[in-house]
Amino acid sequence: MEKSIVKWCKEQHEAGNELTLKWDGGNDSGWVHFEIDGEGVDNEYTRALVNRMDHTLDYGSWAGEFYASGQAIYDPESNSFTGVDYYGEDESDVEYIDIKIIVPKKLWFNTLHVEVECNHDESCQTSVRFFIKNGFLTTEHTDFCSNLEEELQVSFDDVFNNYQSGANDKEFRYCGDSWILDREVGVESGDDLIFYIKQVQFSVMGNIEKNIVLELDEETAAAIDEQLNDVDY
Image 1 (spheres, rainbow, N blue to C red):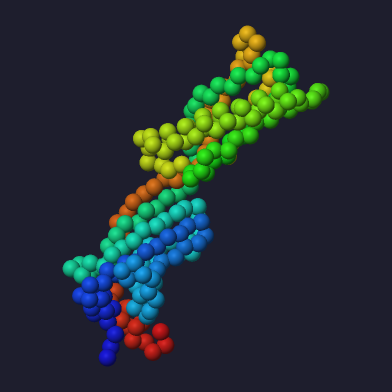
Image 2 (image 1 turned 90 degrees about the horizontal axis):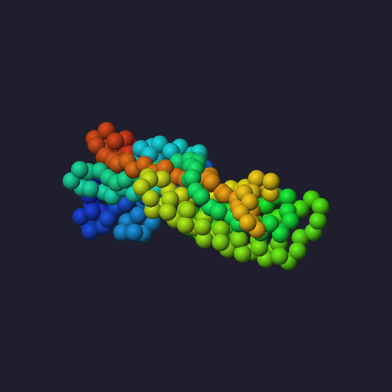
């Protein structure tokens, strides 16, 4: 008996099964797989459909700075797998901020180095260090740095959380930025020097949604059936 992809899909549906093609990948790796009622299935029919969806998506080897995921469910009325592909590309963005740093004048230093690192699913990590060309670091220096690191962690968490919840179509992904604050550019205010961090650069993902349809029309079905009935397939 000749094998038919359309007949197989319809029989599975009539048996009460949900047929789903899913995909996930980017940045040089990715795959398409087939599920029946949420369970992975691998046979000659599902492999043929996976190959067709690979061709429809046209991501090739999934190489490039992007991420894509989605699923398409079999619809017997249109005789097709229909769904949505969620596609995103890595981009860079800049947020203009106004973070104030107050350093007591009595703490001698040449430069103050500030670093922040943050992933989209984690709290920010900050690092603050004084650099002194002629002199020594004291416990006052180290205590100041520890306190400032905690304050900056809260400030940068707020920056990225506000960005994520703001009116933009991009998703925050990662930040690794740093600043060197020279003592000479500090603004004197009484017994303190005032510094400002005015902007921060980070990577984001711009998201695009597009409809995906793998139609088992006469031509497509015939091509798949030819493969299924090839003894060497």
